[in-house]
Image (cartoon, rainbow, N blue to C red):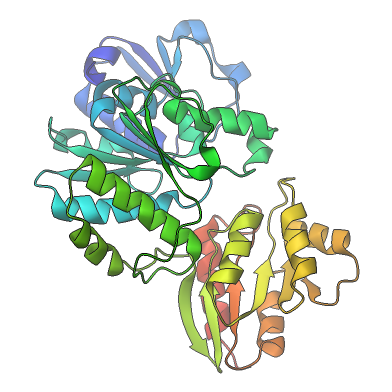
Length: 398
């Protein structure tokens, strides 16, 4: 059903006024005929639910937003365009897969392909560009998925690790949010999952991609995890859209890494530096260490969201060949839990950590910022953290 018909003559409250809230307001004022459009940024206890037909919640607001009056931009969008949408989620890799798939499909399909959602612009920014043949690639965060009662025609679910526990409280609630990408699919829909999620129940046709993929693809992207990402894109584009396999390989081989995703910053005073600021979980840091052959120093730490660090601490104990520079709250926690591991060093902040890295990393070796933690409380987002790292490694002498 068209969004404009759903909201026609309705009393609307926009709960949250970030990027999506502003885009939603613009859409309602320019495209729809609503009776009322109000904006609210307070807590849920301050909302008069009886006063509005729809309360459109922005992603990331911590609240129990169930009920017939609560909805979201993503929910409204899928109500009109679910059959044209490829939704991509997973704890890690969704931006890379979405971007790679966009690169392939936009060049190989003879129809419009749009990139929207978590890594692109809000989906309703493209409303006027969508026709019945448009393919919509939608990177979906757990927050966008949390209260959905609709799923995209094609769901891509890459992997699942503990994350955002400061928001959800438990792994089970985080998992429940992610599962909405397939929960509402039907028999004529498609679900592409990583092997880790083989057991996910879905009415859709399920295609499982092995998590450990042999090195089949020539890529600029480093790491085994990107071989998996490439296999996912290859399978979707060839089996679902009929793209030529050799052309898909060729396009993917020229794709460069996204910003802050194991991005080579450069070599300074003989040390190679990599910005993996997107890393917010332990598994991503472990992947980063194994993806750069000359890696020697890892910068770890940020906001402590109470996610488990056991797997990373086991890795640190088993791999004393690396220097581990731990920082901020989560780094302090890891440093305390490991207690007297000689390969570990603690620094108060990123500036101090980079200064130490320049001293203990030898020429010909690599240093990677891969925090295994969120940036909040210290930086506005992971992009700012990566940009600060870039400036710090370029400044001064060893």
